[in-house]
Length: 104
Image (cartoon, rainbow, N blue to C red):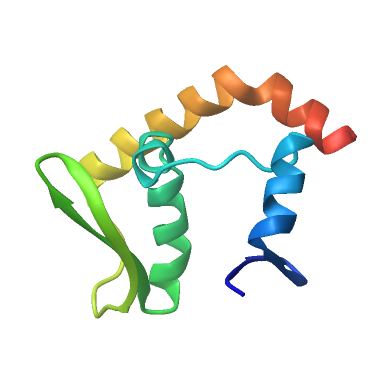
């Protein structure tokens, strides 16, 4: 059966549905993930190892995402500034909830 990896274990679709009912898992789209700046943050780390998450975009929508080996490293200053603003905005809007989740 197909599953999703969570650090240390693989969950089945049934387990994910149960966790979702308990508000433990909230599925998000790649577009939502990208809007937070977290896609960029993940790629910054992956670039250190010569990897990246690559997205195909058609008509302004992400149609697929895949890991790839890359020869380039990093991003230009303008792209970094734009993404840092997205991440800071996400943290400002979600910081209280994230802190409470971490404590529980």
